[in-house]
Image 1 (cartoon, rainbow, N blue to C red):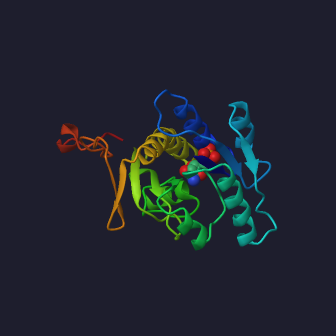
Image 2 (cartoon, protein in one colour; image 1 turned 90 degrees about the vertical axis):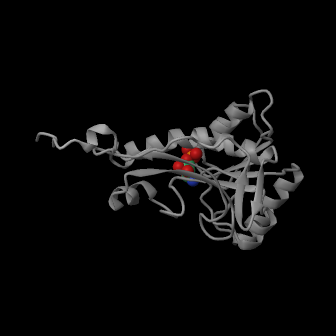
Length: 221
Ligand code: GRF
C-alpha cells in the first residue's frame, strides 16, 4: 500500500510504525507527497520506506493525477491511505480507487467536513469531538465510515489542545482501520461499510452524567 501526504506526516509515521509489527496485514511500499517540502518525506526515508514526489503545484489536476497513477501502478500499489493529503482528487481518480482508498479526517463525520475542524467544533460548543477513518468517495470528506474515535472537549480547551487530543486518537485509529481493510474485514452494504471487528462497549459522555450529576448541590463559585 501507499501513503499520500502533503505535510508533517504524523499519521504516516503511526502507520509505518504499526506496519512493522509481525502479522500486520499491509506492507507500506511507498510514501508519496505532492509537495517536495513535506516534512513527512524525511521521516519516511529515515524509517527506510521508499518515497516519491509528484508535484501538484502549477499543474492541471488531470496531469498531476496521471503522474500519481503512473507511480502507484509502477509500484503495484493495492491500497492508498490519504494522511494529511491536501489536494482535492477528481471523481475519475477517486472512482478508480473506490473501496481501496482511505482517508482520516479530524472530526466525527458527517460533522465538520473540510478545514479548521477543531476551531469549528469549539465554536459550535460540541462536548464530544474526534476523528474518522473512511473510504474515499468523490465528495469532500465523504465516503463509507470505517471507524471513529471520540474525545471530550474540555472547558479550557483551545484549538491546539483539542487538536492534540484528537491527533493522539488518529494515531491509534488509522493503523487499525487500515489493517481491517487490508485483511478483507470491510464489506460494503448499501453504501455503508461493515467492519468485522470487536464493537466498543459502553459510551463516552461529557460532562459525566454519573451519580454526582444528579445531586441537588450546585458547584460553588
Ligand atoms: C490530521 O489531522 C488528519 O486528520 C488530517 O490532516 C492532519 C494531518 O496530520 N487529514 P499529519 O500530517 O498526519 O501529522
